[in-house]
Image (cartoon, rainbow, N blue to C red; front, side, top):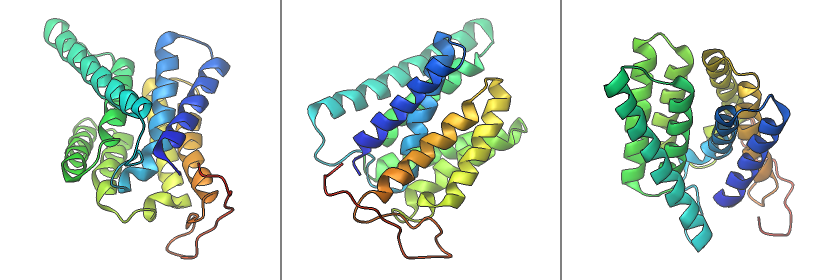
Length: 218
C-alpha cells in the first residue's frame, strides 16, 4: 500500500483522538503527529515511505513536514538557550513531525540520518533513565536496515510499539497516547494485509503471509 495512504489513515486516526479526548491545540498536535508517525513506522524498513512516483501534493506534504519540524526544533533550541527550559510536549510533537518529513525521503543517506537520530535518542533514554525512549531510539535506529515487510510488520512489533507508547503516555501524562500509537501502527499492518503481498503477522513463527487483497490499488 502507498505510504501516502498510510499517512492519511494515521492523520485521520489522530484527528479522531483529538476530537474524542479533552481538546487543546498542543494535545491535538501530539495525537495527530504520533498517530501519523506510528502509521508509517512499520515501513522504516523500506527504501522510501512514499511511492517513488509520488504526486506533487505528496511532495509538498513531505517538504512541509520536514521544514515545519526543523523549524520547531530550532524554536526549541532557542527556548533552551534563552530560558534553559524545554517543553516536553512541544519537543515530542516537533521531533515526530521532523521524523515524518525525514523518513519519507529515500536512500542510504536517509537511513543513516534516521539511524543516527535513533542512536541519539536511545542514548538520551539511557542517560535520563527513560526505558521507553531507549526502546523508541533503538527501533528507529535498527529498522531502516531490516528486510522490507519483515520483523517490523509483525504482531511482535505492534507489542513493542505499544510498550513505547505506554511509556510516552506516562511521560507526557496525556490520556490516549498509547492507544493512538498502537492503533496507528496496527492500521499499517491491517492496510498491508489488504494488498496482494499481504503481511507475515507471526514471522518468524509463521512465514506464510496473511492477505485479503482488494482488486483496487491503494
